[in-house]
Image 1 (cartoon, rainbow, N blue to C red):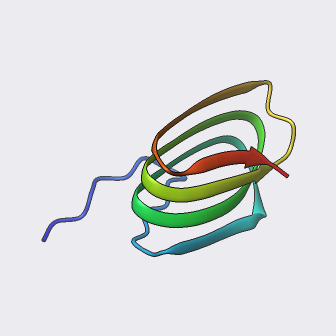
Image 2: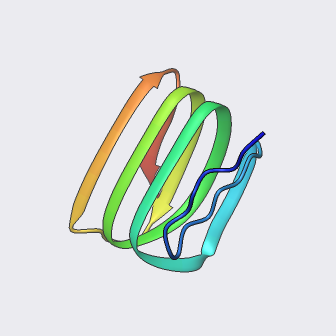
Image 3: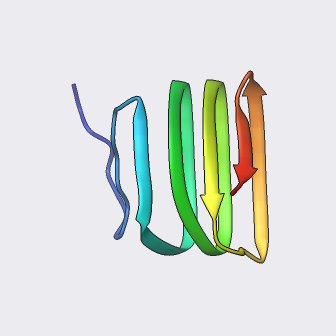
Length: 78
């Protein structure tokens, strides 16, 4: 099995729960496919996608918020 090629400052994880509130990201991009939950901080831009079931909670005050949910997930600001 191959791993994706990552750009600088990218994290690729395969897990069911992801807690990233200890990181302050200027530009945050997150994808959940299948099921999973994530918490993160986005300061400038948030790009979030859920395909399946899962929840994304974010903190911060991003100027741009681009979100899309396909399935039974939710994306909410804490």
